[in-house]
Structure formats: C-alpha cells, structure tokens
Image 1 (cartoon, helix red, strand yellow):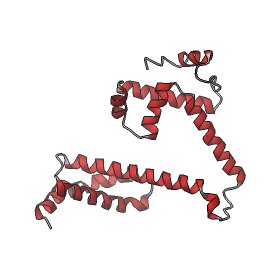
Image 2 (cartoon, helix red, strand yellow; image 1 turned 120 degrees about the vertical axis):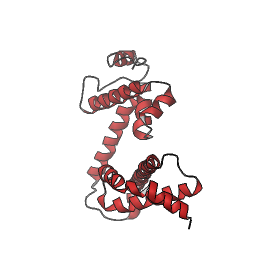
Image 3 (cartoon, helix red, strand yellow; image 1 turned 45 degrees about the horizontal axis):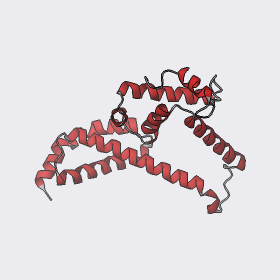
Image 4 (cartoon, helix red, strand yellow; image 1 turned 30 degrees about the vertical axis):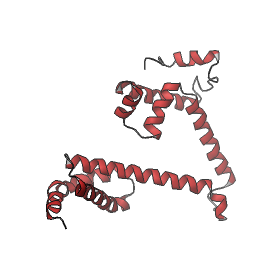
Length: 195
C-alpha cells in the first residue's frame, strides 16, 4: 500500500464525501445504487491517482462521478433497447406488452424520427450532439464553430419544432428537403444561419 496515496486520498477526496453524496442523491434516480456508485467513483479516482495525482482533485472526483453516471445510463439504454428488440426470441409470455402497445411504441418512435428528420440541418446536428451524444454546450459550440448561445437557441428551437410536430402545430407537416416550402418553413422559425 502506498501511504502517500492513502493520505492524499483521505485529505483531497474523502473530505468531500458529503458533497459527493448530495450530488449523487440529486443526480441519480436509483437510490438503491447510490452507495455502489460512490464506491465505484472512489475506486476510479484512487486508481487514476495511483498513476498521476490530478491537479484539481475535487473537480476530478465530480467529473468522474458524472462520467460514471453517463456510462451507466448508456449501458442501461443499450440493454433496454436490446431487450425490447429481442423480446420475441425470449419465448416468454408478457401480459403487459400487448401487440397493440408494441405497435403504438413503434409508431411513436417513427413519429419522433420523422420530427427529428424535419429539423433544419444545423438545428438537427446541434440537438443530436447535445441530446444523443450528450456533449456539453461548450463542446458542441467548439465542434461546430458556433457560440454557446447559438447552441442554446438551436436546442430550444429543436425542442419547440419537435413539440409542434407532435402536437399538430402549424408546421407539423413540413415538406421534404428541397421542396419550395422548405425555405419558408425555416424562415418562419428564425434564421437558420443566424441562430
């Protein structure tokens, strides 16, 4: 055991345990997993510090926590998508998932896909990077060469247009890209290039 590492860990990481627990309780929806999450965060921080001590230990711990929660969410999504996609292969009778519910879910997913595909190009890219790839506003702005304010506006615009599509707003039936109405649609919802 490296006593200097243990001392560093107690002095720089463990002193923030109550702040970490408050953060996890605010951020993680499965209360029964909070203590396991905390332990896994500590293990990751400890192992990383054994290689090189982080310059800002508290920030490093919270960044590790955020990444761990993101990883768990992604894994959870992959498992649930695979489970739904392969439900027929299980040969199990599940009363809750009727053919009607399964069809309804597929139709909702199709509508969401259609709504997303109808977004103006830049808006669609910003929404994808922020909501699907889960990049920060700053990372999206840097990647696309636009301001953070523009990223914020494009995400809000995307949410508004998707909601309008789902709730039958005035532009719910946007024509396909390239159609003469395409430009009118974009102009009616702010400047595509300026926002």
